[in-house]
Figure 1 (tube, rainbow, N blue to C red):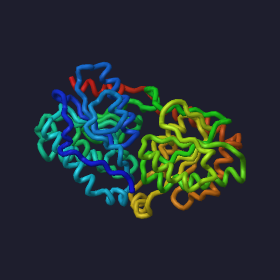
Figure 2: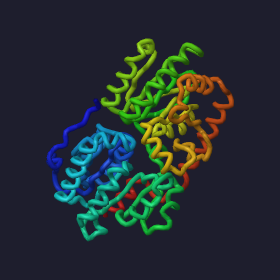
Figure 3: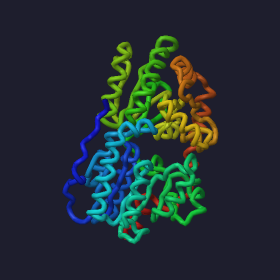
Figure 4: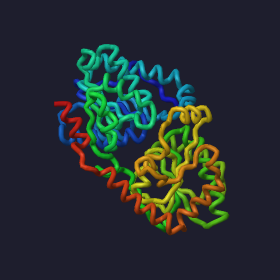
Length: 391
């Protein structure tokens, strides 16, 4: 059973002084990106009082952490239903805290299933600026309206005061609304990340099942079986698994324990420092883009609960799942979805990533194209954008 943290009454962590900014980031990647933003904002505006409902990275960046929301990261309709009571209680507690403390602004970071509902509740309660209240509603790392639920952008325009986006084409997505939308660059390219991925032909294989418990449970066993086959059929090469939190590490250890022959070949490392890799099997999340930018040859695997998959097929309107593939409009990382993610096939794909000169060359060339796409001229950084809205 996954760990579910206890929600304190009204998130009653004492707050020192009036809060200028409340940051809400519900996943490990959002916590990391928001932490970079908060750290730079505090450097430029040390007088600002920042509170956060996020994770460890925001805490380390100097925000007062009211509640760790990253302990339970879930994905998909079925997974959310399992924790419905928890999310309902948490939602009410966060809403009550904002009503009581009235920060100058709330910054929502990604996590749209929770954050957009909260923005709507604040609007309906008359707390938000656009409904007559005093609290600005700001959003960093936009929901992917270009992939599914496009009509959300009109609701966002009604609720939000300003939006900052990390892909240059997203500005055009909101051009038919009156929502102020600013491209602020991609966080992977504008500041040093805790995890520095590099391509090294002689390095370990990288197995990245994601930063959510549900993903690790569904995907990591497939990766481990593929790696087991790879060792027998192709070559002896160690593997590295990166984890973002102790909760995910515990889940990884449970999965690895079912493959005793792999115990001495797998290195588990935190999401920090320099990590060199020769090839990668990755879920479709944030780390897949990070690997792509590092030029590491790899393959994307996507596997969710069957009902969640059916819903996704119905609503998604994009040809790819991986972010790098969407940006390049080609299978930079070929995708293996649901039952197509067979361990024997993935083992063979790993070998191709290591031995095919064409794969290695194309990966390197497309990695440079990705960097150019994400470093187009931008108007502001995330922290300058935010600072300008807190003047």
